[in-house]
Amino acid sequence: MPLTILVVDDEEGTRLSIGEFLRLSGYSVIVASNGREALKLVEKQQPHLIITDIAMPQVDGYELIQQLRQHPPFRLLPVVFLTARNETQDRVRGYQLGCDVYLPKPFELEELGAVVRNLLERTQIIQNSWLQQLQMAAVPSQFAHAAVTAEPLRGSSPELTSREQDVLVLLAGGLSNAQIGDRLFLSPRTVEKYVSSLLRKTETSNRAELVRFALDHHLIK
Image (cartoon, rainbow, N blue to C red; front, side, top):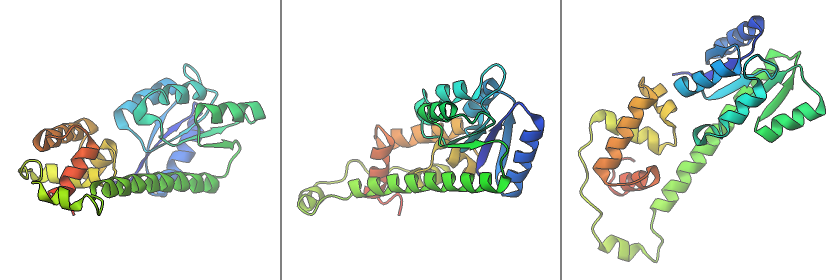
């Protein structure tokens, strides 16, 4: 499944031009005309990146990003400000609130495309780094190896359904519920149910423990 990008702008022409360019670049695109619509779409669709204007009715771009950053699942969601408000104080405020890139209008679609690719690739690097840290934490030190291997592993290997196995593999790869859902054609809520089932079957309390259990019991390679 392609990565999903949310485009937020009260100008229909801007939404259409950006949306068409991104679709031709291989992304899935959803659109909103103001920040209020965008907040609902973020909660429902969980996009991988947001491109937003600042000056919009109801909820503007500043308030949009401020509300997003108050929720842990969206604190690292890449956000691009694309706006005609290009004074220094406007840019400073945007960065202080948590935007990643500030592009002034008028803009070139090619530059926007490069920004989008860079941010999404950086997100993937962060996820891969997180996975590596989990895997390193799951390997006992040389000095503790004898003691660890002398004790039986906690619990026997649980019986997993094929779908639970699929979710576990992607979870261990550092993917979010939304990204797992994209790969498996499931809603984030359904993915969360599978994750809860995996935690229950493995008697673990969080995802890090779940990944370590899966590695110890050879549930994933």
